[in-house]
Length: 409
Image (cartoon, rainbow, N blue to C red; front, side, top):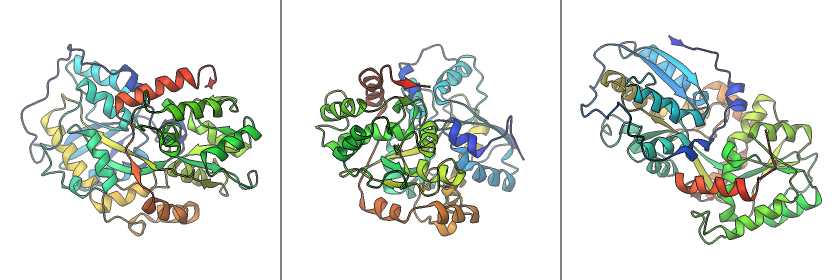
């Protein structure tokens, strides 16, 4: 059985949690030095000595993709895990919560599901247990990653493990009844915004997966000098975003608001990703007839969710997490990551197709998926997101130079 301190609503996970809020990164720095927790040099046993109770914290909306994997493992392996307690929280609070527990010498969160933001912040502060290559022989699924997912694993170093992956974006979304000719280039997007002031919209990047992906993707679209260096290599991007911003009334604080604005007609073209395109239409937040377009020269800026284990988790609980994680990386369990398109496609490992997914997922994606995604995913190159320090710099520059005075909660 799994215990829930509060109900986990799929709608609330999507609309109430930022897929990749990176505001936590701004607090990154050297470890404080007052932690009472050090990483154990004792290897976790192959299986725990007795069934353990696990506390799992999700700060990325990942349970929407993986909770059924976890529940099935708990049902099938009661000698490993007796109970799981799930909780959700905002990504910016993750590091403070973990550091407080480690400082007190008592870690009550045994496994964290996080995006790149929480992963990187914890790496910089030295909070996570090294999982690879220490336990590579138990986590054999890490050797079967899709190539872009393997690249995302490189961002984790030894401290985290990719569990779900998607190519993300940036994409544009619109309603065909409102927009007859959608923008298909940076120039035409700017022309559309100029002709329809206030009708192009994207959310503040540090609060929004699509906003962040758009920010990181534009240097490739515009042919900037160094897409990995927002401070010295993005001159074209910053100039473009400033000009685009002249015709943007405000920047919402969340992606969900842009989706609602698209549905109401307040916005006519918004920034999106594969998951944020499909899932809100499944939920009915956005009309089913919404369409997507790409900008000439775009590349996929990839994204992933990770499992990390805080230092201080005891060896039996770490053993249980490793066994659970090994199961989650099998193709049979990865097929559940298709979900309702929330992180489309979702699976991080090879050999997983939609025919293996639960019937509910197959039905949702048959109705709301897009045939063009298959071609776009196979024919368009991918790029990793910025590393943590570059991302912090990009957010800071955007907040000061682009969004200042125009971000509305």
